[in-house]
Length: 398
Image (tube, rainbow, N blue to C red; front, side, top):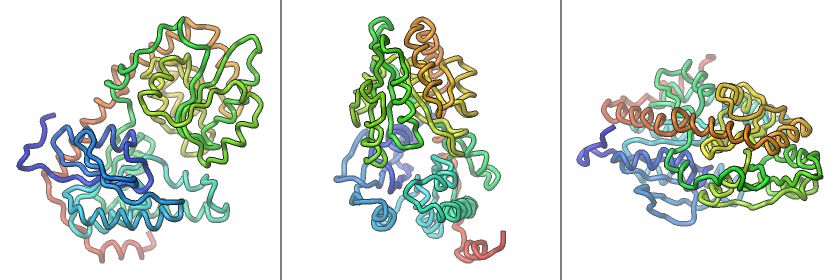
């Protein structure tokens, strides 16, 4: 798709109070795609300094000391910086910024809400929320998203399941899935299969809902004569979870690397024989398409994934791995043992997954939809909604 002409280049302001400056979706995929297509892109994000990277301006606001400060002081700082930017198109990524999005629409700006998760379901499982508050807060989150979707310029959903909900609320809803960038999938070629370590990889952020505990328990159930290890790269949420999991039987087989740059993550995957995606069962995960699933496939690794509809649709269709009950360490151990002791089958599964990423499940197929949406917004003026209309709907019984 041709780039925007310089004399008509719109200014894009991307907003997040939650994510990191170089987030895979926000910066590495969407931000860089827009910048390469001629847009002036600024990402307002908690960071320790401003920086220009790959044509994208990172505009830092103070990093929060904790969750409460993030939802108050950081959100306020993002709001102030957003107003100072006076951009043509705003693109925000967190439900706590919906109020800012509506304010920007009232000021006549074009505003996109990028929905990464099934947020109402996420709220129901937040460990830091008191249990009596989770259900009412989930309801408030759902109603707020429902209302705002009618007044924001567009909704981008990260999965078809999320899009299914928003497409019933607004016609300005598209899916832009979190597929890998092809140039990254070939940056670090995998080692020949016989030269790889007897290891499986678990990469990302770790919470009680991501299944690392069950993976460690599975390692304890592997035969003693199988010199298998679990290579773990990422951070724990909350940090205290590491102490709990390190006490689980099987931890002696874990190689903990901590948070790594993407280049080193690629090296970890290049030496592994399988990738684990063991999300635990709750509503937001059942139809999820986590980025790490496709990253493993892109690296040529067979996957061991939770037997949920979202994972099953990909893994069974392609034949790129094994599905397991993520709450059953013995079943997980059986899948790990099979892939480590059947190298030919494991390599063939990995090759099928990698080929499908190269043909279909890659960012090149998604970025065109993102750019088309931006061109549509740029070329067509949108009248600002009235505050009275929004207030009337807030007060209605609908």
